[in-house]
Length: 140
Image (cartoon, rainbow, N blue to C red; front, side, top):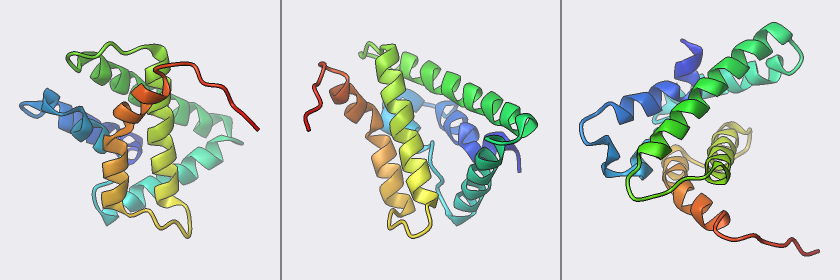
């Protein structure tokens, strides 16, 4: 199992290389989460490597490299989506939403299932677009 596969880069790359990939950005983003129990196991292994990488420089360097590739692929994918002007704030928001969905999917005790995670990931761009449309103020 390669780190790219476990991290989701392969899922996204697989979707955008299919004919008509730009028909739906949602399909591309949904490809960032596991599609079956085997891929879910791979994501759990990846999340464990991320945890180890926080205290081990060598593993941390590999994690950072894979994350950088996945993030660049995400930026390239968003940049190709026709009719939408993406800012760095949009990219940050989509990235954060996808990371959150992936983390929740493998959290022990989570009730988020694979289909719901894919649906939520598929809406990440829409959610991020609304979240970054106008400045907001936090209130206590």
